[in-house]
Length: 112
Image (cartoon, rainbow, N blue to C red; front, top):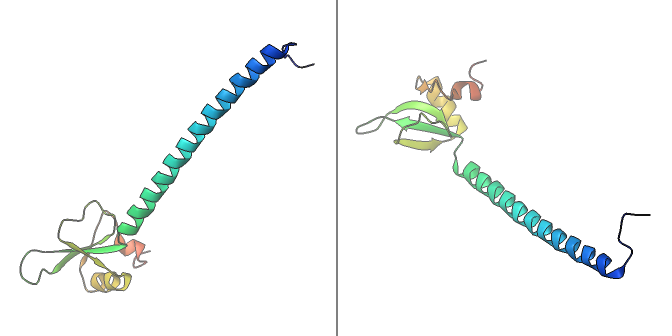
């Protein structure tokens, strides 16, 4: 019927062999699922840590706003602070530069 050996000893050997492989596969699945959960958690933490909008500040007393960026912009300098969406709109409307790389003006809907 099936291509299985006719005697009990060989059937038990096959069963042991397949059980061993099923356990190894199950352990590997658990390991990969744990890795996937860790990656998803890391991505969630990074997303939560990245603000939506930042303003880059100039040098000197009073540190005037220089550029508005989206939160993950690679062009933002070290002198930045988190701002709200409304503050980003207000700063761009007042003439503060919108970064030409991350285009916060487009993201904010100020440009079509």
